[in-house]
Length: 172
Image (cartoon, rainbow, N blue to C red; front, side):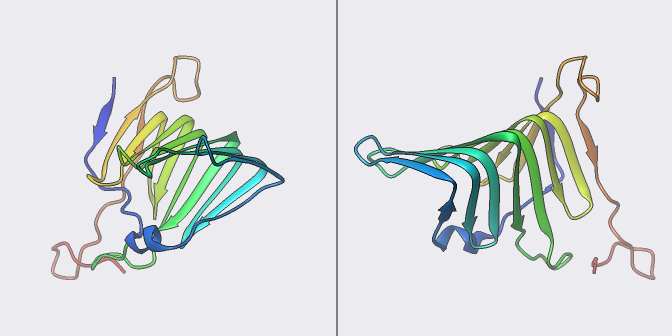
């Protein structure tokens, strides 16, 4: 069962989508007619503040320009600066899983197998984490009973800092 996490753990830097994408790897195969590129061995993707590391990456583009990305590996990781808010400045989003699927059509990133997403000190752990980049809604699913967290989803959300008058105030 998917469980929605209402706390906004991440809001990625919007300016990154306007930046060029740089992909490097040990090997690459590009099929322009089919719109498929395969990258293998120490794959690194950089777009603005976004950095993704994987063992293998497949990028598919359809005739309308919509893209899907599938990154896999023993540990596939990403790091991206979150948009600054009045409460938080210079916060980074870090994620990891064995597989990361992303679609520009559905605006969803799906992290599968030992998935973790961390923003600042907030953390979400599950076997599957689905994040919609437009709505900023997370859904998470636990793994089977033989996994370390016994099929459960875990979220660690830090309390909002309070100012001297006892009310909630701006975080540094």
